[in-house]
Amino acid sequence: MSTPGDKWLRPILKPIKGILREVLAISLFVNLIALSVPIFVLQIYDRVVFHGGLSTLKALALGMIIALVFDFILRQARARILQKSALKVDILVGNLLYDKLAALPLKTLEARPTHFWQALFRDIETVRNTFSGGAAVLLTDIPFLFLFFGLVFIIAPPVAWVLLVMFGLFLALAGYSSLSVGRAVVVEKEAATRRDAMISEMVAGRVTVKALALDRALHPGWDDRRAETILASLTRGQQADSAQNLGATMAMITTVAVTSVGALAIMEQQMTIGALVAANILGTRFVGPLVQLVGMWKSVAGYREAVRRLGGVFAEAEERTDTPMEMPRPTGRLAMDKVNYRYSPDGPPVLNDITLRFGPSGMHGIVGHNGSGKTTLLKILQGLYPPDSGRVLLDGGDITQFSRHQIADWIGYVPQESFLFSGSIRTNIAIKNANAPDDVILAAAVKAGVHAYAVDMPDGYDTDVGEAGSRLSGGQRQRIAIARALLSDPPILLLDEPTGNLDRQAEQSLREQLQLLAKDHTIIVVTHSPSLLAACDSVMVMQSGQVAMAGASAEVLPKLFNRDPETPATEKPTAGDD
Image 1: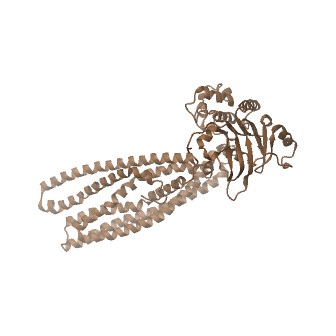
Image 2: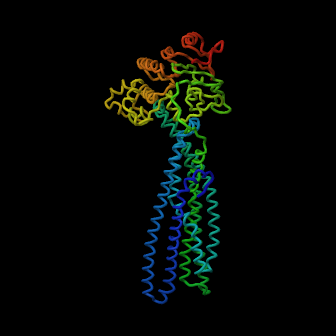
Image 3: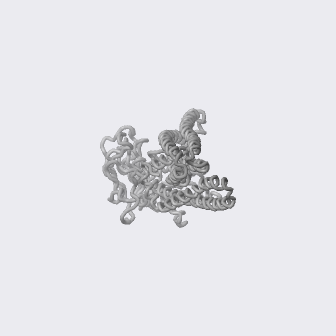
């Protein structure tokens, strides 16, 4: 079942080609056994009825019972083989997709909405069901249609040409159905995607929807998208039903034509009544798969679309997933060398010719207005975004030579919006290393301030945080995220507004812990907290994607808080400090 964009699927199907050959062999015997029914009918009419051969009837009936038992066994075996093959495809494609998503750069993942990535796993189900369902059985039966046509040609030559003409008409109808239904399926899928996107947004923003009572405001948009989906579904259904109904009508026309031509042939003594009855049975077996072929294009079109979408994702460029050799733990020197970055080629620069140096060790603050490029700078330092030009250097080495796992071990990152996974507090802290010793987990929890509130909970560290940490406050989630980043004791720690959800006491506690860590770790923190900024060894001010001011905190902070932040610095400061 080849389709454009399925090159990624061929290596997966290659190991099961032997199994598919077995299925074809079974289908051959199933179709050979199917020939026994019209032959049985022919013998009954031409021998048993006219000659009163009761013993012949018993022998024929016994033979048919045996043949039908074998037919059932073979069909069951074929179905189970197809199901096992489809399950193997599901497992292989599922693992391949999971690994691919894990290897995709963050920018690629952010380029599409969440529901797109979720839909890919439903596409895997579509591929699996195609290989195990009626479409697969039909494709294994179609090559043997000419067995039935050949037998009709032998026992009833006058009606064979009717089947040949109808075969051509069915192929034309199947071709038309594939084009019209295929296009309709694409339109329906796109409409359903837009509808699902709105549902995903409403669920993700459920707090805002409830708090502002947005249900009435959003309802017209929901009605429009649902109506669009329903209309597309109706259009696809009408086209598919029209083709399938026309196919059913053509099947009846085939029976009428075969019977009529056969009757004329019997009157002219060119064939027997038994041959006509057998030809009708064979004609039904010949036409049946063709009718199914006309009606199966919805599932085929869905399969083609699923393979195309999956192929598009598999063609995306990946991050580096391995390195030729293991490197020692960095000392904590992190630098940018003339880094430029835009979110899109024609968009404005988010970072413009940034050159700076941090560490080893020390606590360094970054401050600036919203949209000045602070968060983007942290993501580039962590290797989540590749710069358009320039380099990020870790201990003097280009960061692109390291794998994502190496960078994550060496550079801890706590985003502004902390995300927790369903499970316990302990699970979330140790999610990267489930076998981490309790004392290591406890040490990270104490440093991040998690221990102070976790021990007060009835279930302690086994407390379930809920979906995305919904059972905890923002400050509690933030501290768990910090503990998670500290678990592997990375030499560099990047923090984006870590005190945004903390009260004053928790902020002071975090400041003290960061100052202790800064003695032998490089801490880079984006913050507007005067308390954290005062604890920093150096401070860098971002403005419109550029370094507006940088230097020792004792020099920068008085200038920062004593001048209008919209006014640029009168002279360009040093780009950073060691």
